Image (cartoon, rainbow, N blue to C red; front, side, top):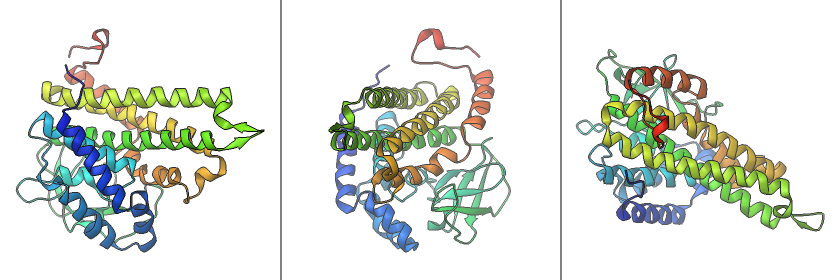
Length: 317
């Protein structure tokens, strides 16, 4: 087991972050929400993502390519990039339709309006082709979540794509978590109260220490899970669900800490942490949240067993 990322993947992530920051970074999300038209997301952001070589990345091929895809997703989370990066990375190799996991009760996808057709999968793995229904935005699920309607029968399964989608989405959540922690550290170092920076208060230090430990643990689990998908693909779904559960819980805790330490400013869109918190909501809520993820994980472990970073944590099927 090697949890170190290939140098090529790390360099690709650094190049992607530099390019997307130069393009506007978090301001891209602000601009996309203000204008509400798909031009910024599809033409400006989509073309920039493709120019980085994302259209040539297929994370199904090998661990090195998957690691590069993971780094791109992490960067997208750090900058709240308003584009369905995970869905595009998992596009069908034949018809090039983007891929999304959708809830059982209602077929919907983040940025669903950007493409005329989607390949969607229910949590059980059944697939269908779907198309967007209108362009109603602004729900609590996120600013660009769009309803889709299937155009044919639900059939077949795609366990590998489901596991990869869950895993790469967790990498995107990791990026948001990392950046929100960095913003909190910067803020408390600059903000002065009672004659000293907030970072000098022990209670603040404790909160940041907990957030840092959670973020570091999530990063290690992201690396481990990506390795597991290729080391034991038949059991990968259980690992991907375990990662998602940890990612959702960690992100909520770290975002809560970051916004609280920002005070009222943490809810103002002039501050990046507020934009990050809003744009990560589709990743945290779709296709399901913590409670449903826990139930899916229990069922998957009972069928597939479970391996962990620690030998005593493994369960045989």
